[in-house]
Image 1 (tube, protein in one colour):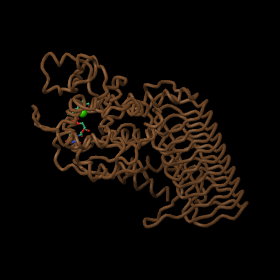
Image 2 (cartoon, rainbow, N blue to C red):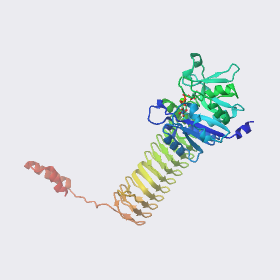
Image 3 (cartoon, rainbow, N blue to C red):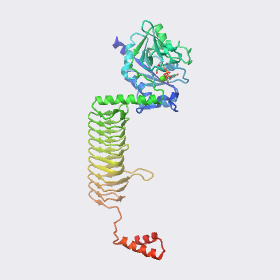
Image 4 (cartoon, rainbow, N blue to C red):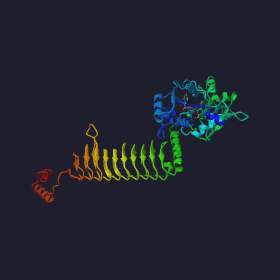
Length: 485
Ligand code: UD1
Ligand code: CA
């Protein structure tokens, strides 16, 4: 039975047309982000994981933006979009998806776009437990059921109806089993029965919840209990933050189960899909975003923010680094306070230190740039040492130019490398040089004014100053300039 049920094709409808007035922002509610993704991403992702295909997202407020956001976060997914021009209620929203599902005669999962905590297991349970009934819907028991539709059971035990809070009597409001807003219905039953739903209620809306009573009177409805709060909807900013916390806690638990040390899971932020290898230590306030991958046995220091970064096994990112679309290879050491911008690639065993910024720059194996340096559009060979205060002048105001430094070169502190420029293997650059020409391999380049020492200059200036002061004339500025010149 279960096997054949599983084979019945599943489509999903995700309701995401509402504005979400209680969010108090200009954006449609489902566009607000939780752990790096728009709210509506989560129910769509879970429905896909539960085997739903296609998925119809019912959009209304900021329909184009919602569609664009979902397509961006779920490339290649079998998504369809149905426009609900006016939000006349949840039943009306589901009806808006009918055309998009024309010809589909399996079972239809219905989810709310504002429920990021739903799990795939719960969706599967609702699908499984429908059995031969026309409709299954998820319920949960809450200490404070305010705001939710209450589930009224018939004397013999089965669900009889769902009554919305605004339509409920004081007696009914005491019920703490609530409708979670997640349904699985036989497609034929769904379309036939939705046509019978009216709007005779306090809100004059077409309630999807009326399906429960209509099924209970006929082909039967099943209430499936799901863990409390899994189906909790996000309705305001506080619930948005609570959902983010709950989701992050879930990601952290999964990582810890796989051998990652998270020093303080309450001070850890992580997007869905981030990967971290066993034996890696994450200090407090680390934030891992987007497609970030961290290998095994790494150490990520406090306050570091990694977005779309890849950190190979055994690498260390010390405190307060910002990595964006950057790679850190095996056993490399970065930080504290380093900034790796898109295209930064720190080679195996290489070191990048404090206040060093890399952009589109490859630092070879074992190379070092330890202090106060900007390297942009550069390729730096293995074993090369880039001294403190080095700057690649990669931009001439119009376009970017490359800097190429060979292997085992030594770039003295405070070197200004005006690109395009190539510095050969094993070359030395004297500290404080401004270089505009290539340096051959093995050469020493000096690109600075020769030092001049003026013996006894200070005493001479003092004497001159005193002389002028006695005459009570001439400005000290002129005097000093004459001496210095
Ligand atoms: C709904 C249920 C309630 C349940 C609760 C669970 C109804 C009538 N009530 O109430 O029993 O306890 O969810 O969270 O269904 N939407 C549209 N178009 C519309 C109306 C709503 O797309 O015309 C979307 C909303 O954007 C939202 C979802 O449907 O994502 C749920 O709508 P909402 O108004 O939040 O329903 P609740 O009042 O929470
Ligand atoms: Ca809601």
